[in-house]
Image 1 (cartoon, rainbow, N blue to C red):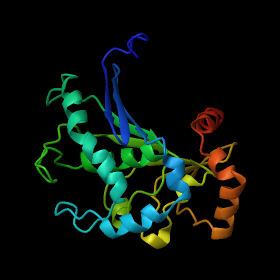
Image 2: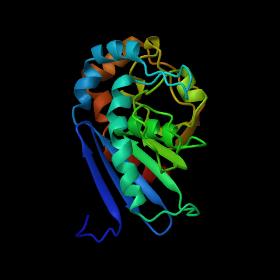
Image 3: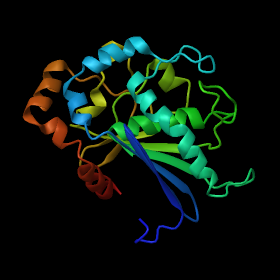
Image 4: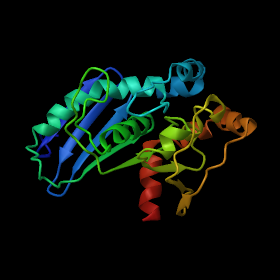
Length: 234
């Protein structure tokens, strides 16, 4: 990134996430990459069954439930990312918009970061550890992300604009019967168009298993396919 003269940027590396921040003249982009072992997580859903019983309950959020593993992964990034954003010399009157984005597991982490940082009072000590947050995200754009929270998480708080490939298996997990829900700002990429979807239907288990066993569900999850289909749709 230095060799390409990106200007102001930062990289925060943690065990389960890598966060890259870039400031351009018009905006700040925070991009999150999740763990490279996502495919193991997709195949083995035992973690989801265990994690849903360990929902995070915060007084500020009420009884909203997030995927515990996702929340822990991004929670460890809040403080260092906040410190790095401060180095961009953002004053209280700075109106530079901040967008957070991610593909796959990174998308779920971006969605949760947006929930936390888009709150009306992001600087209050509303979370464990008495961490004060300096950033306030304006919007989030995610691609092929898994479900990250329950019904309250996706209806009462800020949600991302989620783009998904029709045959991608990752946005169908964790399953709804474990208490997870789709967000309601979703756009389907079918290779020819970009369609706003109101209430994505759940995938039948037989169809889900077929996509998994044939490899179509994983192949259609590739970031390169997302880039290609978005380019075609635009």
